[in-house]
Length: 328
Image (cartoon, rainbow, N blue to C red; front, side):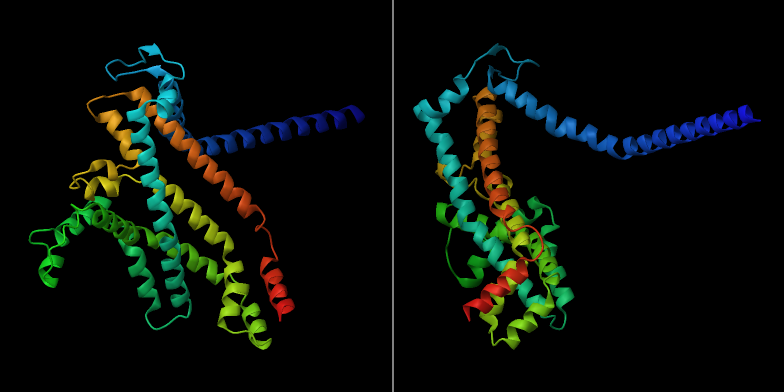
């Protein structure tokens, strides 16, 4: 009788282990089913190009063969700092990119923040207003660019004809960068607007009432409750917007080809494209430029992570409100 009991317990354990292994296999299969396509795309469109780009940056490669033709060592990187012509072109393109980003990023945050604060008051039709703000970001970049080219054309454009002016919006360097900035704002503020709207919805409403009871005005409320309450969303918007404009290419390619001095219009990615598809076809040097640009973006990402780390966690709204009370 005792042996039968032990046998039955062993059979139950074996069956339980089999069921557990079947469940684990089923879960692994489902996990592979969902993550498999992502893994393939990650390898094909990120990991493989990254590894290939690093290899190309240390080699001589003209694109005529499948593999690099020779090992160049650090020559491509040294040229970025020592070759007078190549170095000047590269760092000018980097400066053009950073200068544009430093101007347009604050506008890409301030404008959607103001619009988000306005819609948070929930005036009549605010939902339709939100949809209209986000709508331009849905349209293809090329279609929007072609519309701007037609509207602001030097000859026969709607803007010049309507206001009876003669401004070469896409021939002058300053005017062209202004149009590119307008293009970026028109297409780009919708995403930041949605993120900031979501952040404003999550701010503790009781803190607004507490500030009002303690005699605080709207300025106190904004700086001591609203801004601390959406700090995470603000840092996310600043980071994604800045890194996005560090890769600026499409807008400049569509609107900036009419400028006589193209060196003033070249961004970092645009310059890399010149070495990839231009007459020189210097793939190794273009890869080295891309790696350096990637390192710069990683440095910016690390700075953003360090700055935002102190602002994570719960209770930041209450701490800001306590500072406000102590200040009064």
